[in-house]
Image 1 (tube, rainbow, N blue to C red):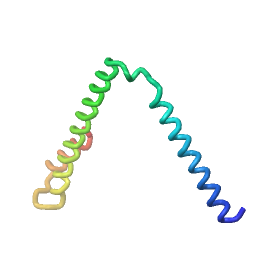
Image 2 (spheres, rainbow, N blue to C red):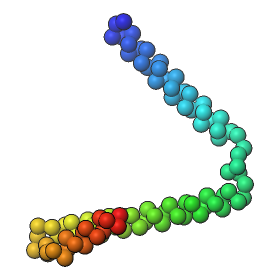
Image 3 (cartoon, rainbow, N blue to C red):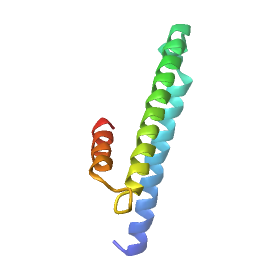
Image 4 (tube, rainbow, N blue to C red):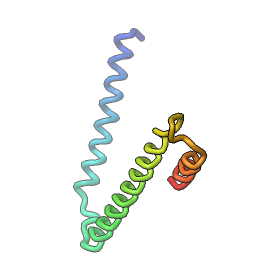
Length: 92
């Protein structure tokens, strides 16, 4: 098989895969499901709020860790700063 033929085959394979994925997504979105009920929407709102809370906590821990990391090797570096870093790293 020539190089051009291989490239053409690869492109058609990729197009059929992405077309299949798009078709599956469209089929799933067009079907009414369990997620359309009011109870499910409340549940999904609670899950979304929980995810947002977790992301906010993680961002806070990363920011604290970054602030402590800035002091490593400078005048503020001491064992206490390194212990705080270890604690934050374990909690995250």
